[in-house]
Image (cartoon, rainbow, N blue to C red):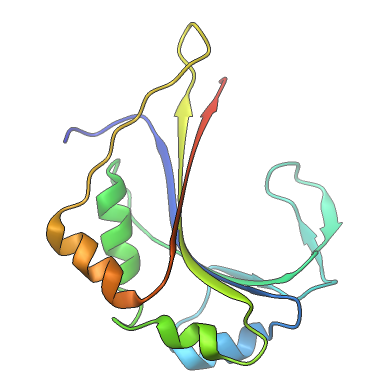
Length: 142
């Protein structure tokens, strides 16, 4: 599939009200792209305002300059262990998932369109993580 004009973010996200981001870092052996504890003052990326974090979160974002969702997923999987399902068993972890967010510019009628595909090998690699996958597609006016 050809490159596109989508904005793509793929990450491993771990959440919990009592989450200790340092424990997740130690368990996975990789430094997060971002982390926060519940109650910590953080900058909301959407509004750029300082807010109080409603929950703890540890997030590892894929680092891929590609315009293909599958390349971002591959980049993320290359940074985590094959079986990441043990993350959910860590103390104070309430949820862990692969988070895929694709932002598509609105067309002249306010709608949008995107397509992405995953090879059978990539789907098998995602399944081996043992984690749920959340896909969000947003259509936004520029």
